[in-house]
Length: 277
Length: 316
Image 1 (spheres, one colour):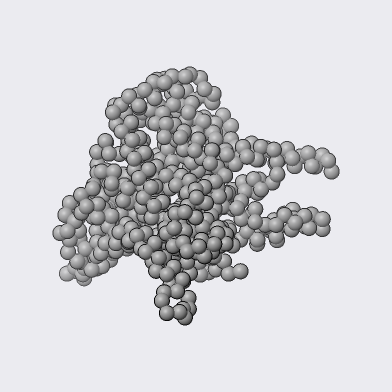
Image 2: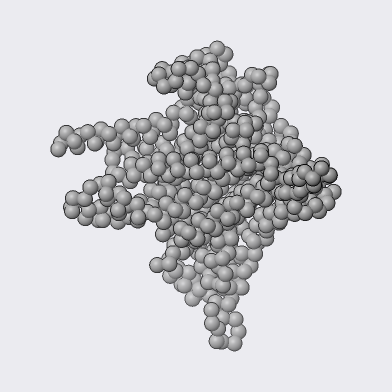
């Protein structure tokens, strides 16, 4: 019996090790590659062999990649601010006020968040051309609203639904208007939720590719995913793996750190809504 | 909702405020979602080109299907619905979606069960599995493209050393393996998301149920299939539909990992290619409209058949 128990414990930990190695190895390998240059790049090595910052210098020393990082930061920050601003008031109404058609409205918002983005591409392209914002950051800020806004509304609504009703009742008895209730009563309680949803929306905007690829046409307006995808070497045949891996590590490290710091909150935010059976 | 005093009752006041709170959000969603969607529908019935967005004429269903009878009596069918490239993309997308979601569900379930157990270092494992999720899709595509490189890739190296393959494989370039490469990367990247959703469902199962089953000496496998699985079914159903919708619209991974490969080209990729790269704007719009229609039918059927409660309000 004990032998069997020992065996199952070993089996369990073996499974744990396999899960961890599979999850972490590709990123670890990208980091190793990013420090290798020249012929070292073409020898498969499982351990960090060299520590050469040449790839980072070539990526960050260029003119376009730093610009892409700035573009991405600007676009993601503004997208998130915009989405949170619209979502806080809307989700208060959706979570706390009973009105006819609320369920339908929530379903519609959810439907929008699950839209295939390609289905709006042609129409958005026209709209962006019409507004004269093609190949500017505003094209992305506008189009990212389609996935950040429904998502933030949805998650904030589930968070707000769980706030105790007594707080609100007390405020109403004191004669507070709905606007006062949101700004003075709910907002202070909502900070954790706002941080979580804001972070998730930021990650979404930071990683987006289809719109950023379609709505930009010059190297200086690209966001980081597009810049990495289109990073090319001196010749067509030569793919600059070293710089690509360095650029990948640069845009991923901040996300990984943020995710690890906020992991509990992120898990809560990801699973909010939907999973309540 | 009933009112019986003269002026505005409290609930009426609140409903009026609610309207103004919701209006800006609805206006924004109308601009970026509803209107572009309607315009895409419209474009799909015209012969609009990328260079002249307003010069298109209404041509009915010609982008979808049209027929012309030649003098010789032969019927010539044209349009997306008889385009083999489109049907290839549909088949690729459907195959990708079902295979990837199947493996992500099974593996996600395993990871979730591991994370639901109490053991030392659980926090570390959870942090580790969040990493693939946090990495941008484009970055994962590039990372794996490098690992799957035919000459210098580490995957070929590992498999050669283990004797699994006898010669190096051009994973992303060969038509036989390109789909496996895409599936591999997608499963690696999205299993964590699936695991976290399932884990949230698992954590809602009361612990004393397991306790009772253990005291009664029920086989763990039986406990899983008879107790755990039925109890997490709602969470699982929701997780599967979310993943399925995501998989059916996949674009970025395929576009970057296996560019221009007919073996992996999905509906989103082929629509964009026609719309933007091939200057067949309206034709691409028709294809994206079809993708939208397929997803809409799929979601409705799934929600109806599975009685999935997506609203989270529950009917307790």
